[in-house]
Length: 169
Image (cartoon, rainbow, N blue to C red; front, side, top):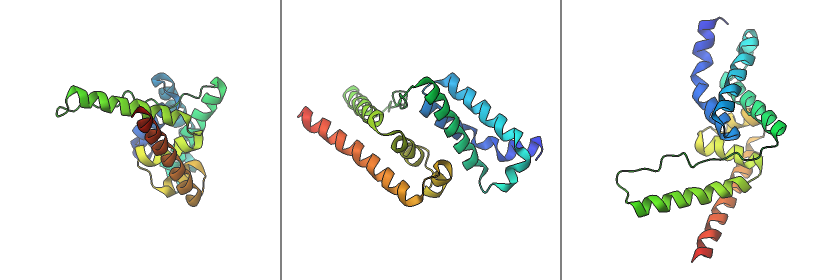
């Protein structure tokens, strides 16, 4: 694989890899460093990349593993920050924007309480839009177990949100 072919096959997944790293590390500079490390690792094995069914899945797995290594070394468990999501709609009034921001902060707190595996699967499926088969390639978890994990994560967030809402009444 030459440089041009590497650019065509590997670089299109750059944004997805960056979002995953940023999601897991919650630090732009560290996410950029991880992305560089991923591309460097892929470049060093460029002659073996043709053997993989999905180079993007390999890149996602590598990104995930490097992020987990970084988190383990720092013992930093803070992974989800949805505050930066744009909630601003020109059709909403200030009260609706406040309600949306409040909901986001509640979901953010609930996501922090999820086990690491559930958080990752939920992010890959619901935020990144990966299929179960792609998530299986990234995480190494079988599809049936992924479905159970995702269902449990969604249920946990939903139940926690309902509990918070009912408590507020």
